[in-house]
Amino acid sequence: MSTVTCPECEAEITLEANTEVGEIIVCSDCGVDLEVTSVDPAAVQLAPMEQEDWGE
Figure 1 (cartoon, rainbow, N blue to C red):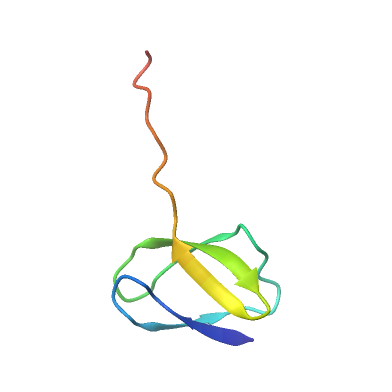
Figure 2: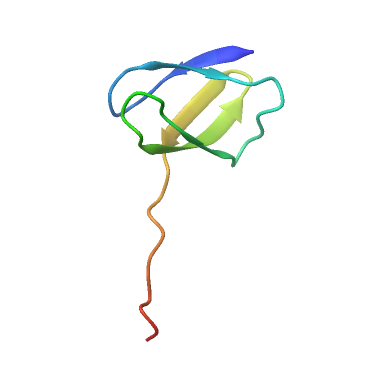
């Protein structure tokens, strides 16, 4: 397992051993969605917001 720092609130987050690149995780402190960008070394970034088309 490895740890990363939340870019939003700077909380330390532990990644599970089976975490994969592209996976979305949630910060347990602030609740923001984070995308895993690397597992070796471990790195995350704010997940892109999904665009809603509202039926258009």
